[in-house]
Amino acid sequence: PFHTTVLDKTGTVFVFGQGGKGQIGSVQLNEKLKCQSPTILPSLNSIRVSTISCGAYHTIVVDQTYRAFSMGSNEMGQLGHGCLPLSASEKYVKKPTLIEGMKDKVKSCDCGFDFTLLLHVNGKVSSFGNGNHGQLGIGYDTDKDQFKSTPSPTIIRGLIHVRILQVSAGDYH
Image (cartoon, rainbow, N blue to C red; front, side, top):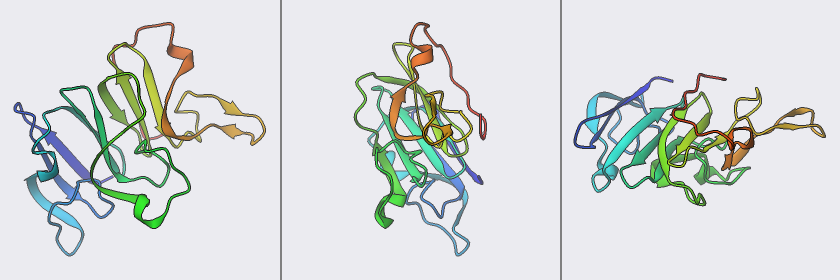
């Protein structure tokens, strides 16, 4: 929860703060696993970024061609790469990785503590990650007696009949 991303007018992303779980990419960290001053995220040099968002230990980036990338902790599926449980190498993703499997282009994003919301160009919203408090909006599993979670981008069906303009997430809501 102690990292920052900044986007400039050219689409360049600067990162700083805590980075031990890959949430600020593969920039140089000090002995306390921190990047002390704003540093360009080199793995995004070829990508023109349009929007960014930080969760507790993950970061989502949307580029100008409407693709979403994720990095950081994937322990609850908040990176959207569609696999749980995770192998050791899948737990922390230290370079922005394309979120695949979506047929709708992504306009913007917002992150909660350990979940992610994506707003699509067509006004639909998808969510993924930890849904234990109902924050994903994808339903309740009566067999397990808990709200549903998912490691894959899932369209929120309760919103498909309206065109959403903006998404915003809190830690657990």
